[in-house]
Image 1 (cartoon, helix red, strand yellow):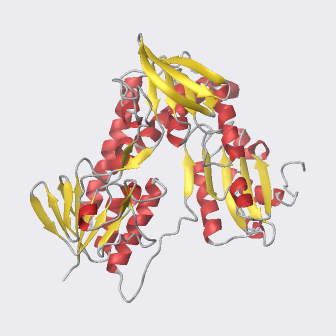
Image 2 (image 1 turned 30 degrees about the horizontal axis):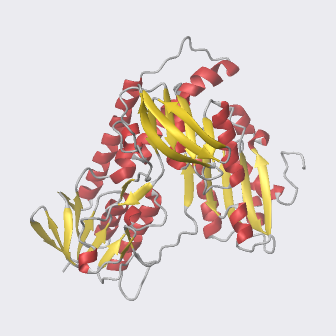
Image 3 (image 1 turned 30 degrees about the vertical axis):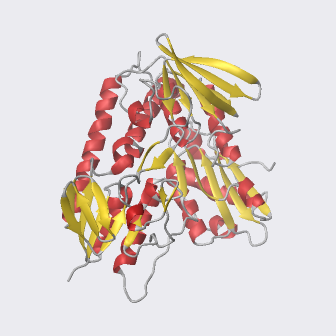
Length: 463
């Protein structure tokens, strides 16, 4: 008899877990209260990247075209058409997820689930029994306790994706991934953008040198940053909002037509009946081990509701791990490994990283060596006019083992997978150098950065 697996939530973690479980022979049911695809597909990764692509294209036509002899008289954009394109892409991909579930024999149930026991859920009055349950309930925007952020018209990332018209100015609270991506979009379309970040640098989890490259580029496009600054309050002010900001230099007041809160997300776990059946929940987050198991046998959790890293690709891998631990037998256990999780930020220039930053490697006691290769020495980057960034490789001096890879510019968000593979295989600098990369490509900067660790980069003069 087939094992019955119930998945609560149809986002990246949930639908991937469902498909993997079905591949391994289970009878699978997915319960989703909204649309399949979750935050990433409906109000996150995918729609944001549609806007970023439109912004990048518009900027290229206006600013880069004339430098290479391509002219477009009076280029303009239609914000409504851009939003229509965004929704078309989202709808197409949602249909794709539904089709994948159907093709794998997964039953999709629309409704709100609540666990009535370790192997039972109630979905709008209907009872569903299972041999194992995977909770993949996702996350939602989190608002910090700042007076005024509950005022009408204050935006979260969900609302920012559906603005009917662009404001003249916008203040973004939060200089993390969500904040800088929206800053890049709005600045490209002529909005006056101000970013307020509590920590000393934007992208606090990114290598400081790489984050600095992005900040300099966005400032050149008109974005104003206030780092080391705390948002004190927000109030209505005529046709917009007044923001009180506290920083080391004292207090200041800003005005913006709209305010976007991009300070992070929180797990969605309330109302699921988790604690009632014995699942441990800490600060709203489901506690699991490396096999994605909760402390209740047969109950697993994946994705934003449990993961320390709220990224779609992390949720997908966690979903696979959970499904395999439920269905693979003979003592075969799969563990989640976060060592090679890449971060990809789709700004202009793009930023990506995997592994340890230089600062973190030093804190962990490594004898660190760093190789940097500026894209100004890379032929493909010069051709495309995207030569302001770099590839930076952090390694351990003792064995030349690669500890981290950090990139700004070019197709960094695609190239970072090579860095992840290097970490997975515990690659050395010599192994990167001896791997032949095609010419002309931006990927050539990867072995050049490794050679630069020894002061031997070929296509850039020694420091």
